[in-house]
Length: 184
Image (cartoon, rainbow, N blue to C red; front, side, top):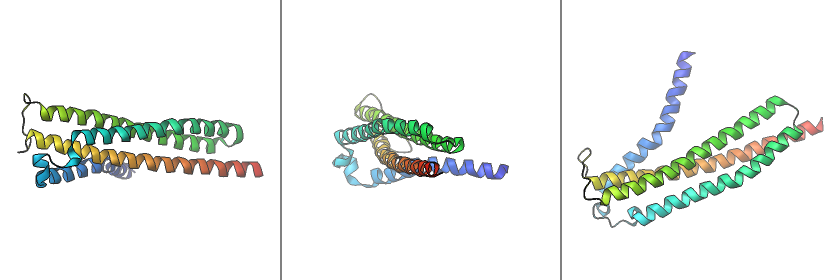
């Protein structure tokens, strides 16, 4: 039993760390091997592109949450009015709470990505701050972090979309339970 719990925790940690490690590795190889990164000519790494991109993704996620919240409240209200089985209500309620936690975490991550990217841009252009990390210049480290954050923000957006579909599945399950409950 303890081995199963341990394996579930390891799987959970790997599921969380994999996107971070993968995006950092891809960003490292792109930044260190693509000539356009060294001279700053690639449009993808321009400061205005990254800030606009992250701001748009953040705005989309906030809009999605705002739109969903009112709909979910209507679903919850209907749940308690129509269903008589408490176990069904609890399952559906837990699903809704989990989906909103996930949406909240993704939105906060995108916001923090925006703040960190902005900070990396300032650090990259400040002459008073100089450092090297694993034989990489300050400029390369900042580009790697920014690029990884863009990849991770796209992944967070994907996760938000998956959450939307999960919420529609919960809504469908709710409708099916209402139909079953009313046909009795």
